[in-house]
Image 1: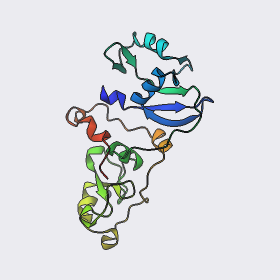
Image 2: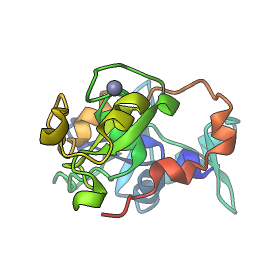
Image 3: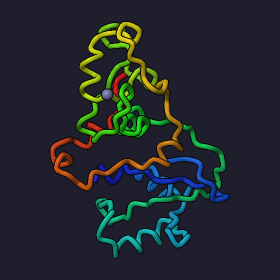
Image 4: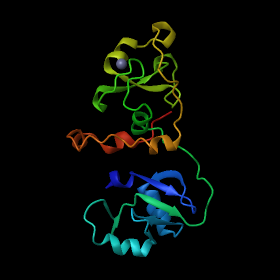
Length: 198
Ligand SMILES: [Zn+2]
């Protein structure tokens, strides 16, 4: 359930231009407040009540509120507000993996999630912060090779300068879903979605 609530929803402005990505939780709240409508793949537009009616017949992708089930929207259309919501990409593991495209930033290998680690370019032990500018994906080997050294001490520099990703970058690079492999049962969803400490 919390996994569904954190899924990405595409936000269109009133001219049907994609302007943002938000969570299912936020999307449903906007629809409930009548600030947005749900758009389906047939370009049909639903307000909260009609969406609620439609949701009764769904059996997957449903959020169960205490009163009724609600289908998780994939796209919403803002009714009035045409201003860009603040572009802010949450600093969490999921988004770091997406930003770096499951690629070790030192050797360039593309690897499954469990073979990648989050490396601090300037190690924490040397005063490095946990933020978009100082973390990159590294394979286990590169991370071990680098150890507690600064990039200039080991001549290991990230392929791309790490920075905060633009929300649209994450939109066009859907998370590689590992077809519900077993790790999901053991790894708390929050592990991937929690905002990391600075
Ligand atoms: Zn590597």
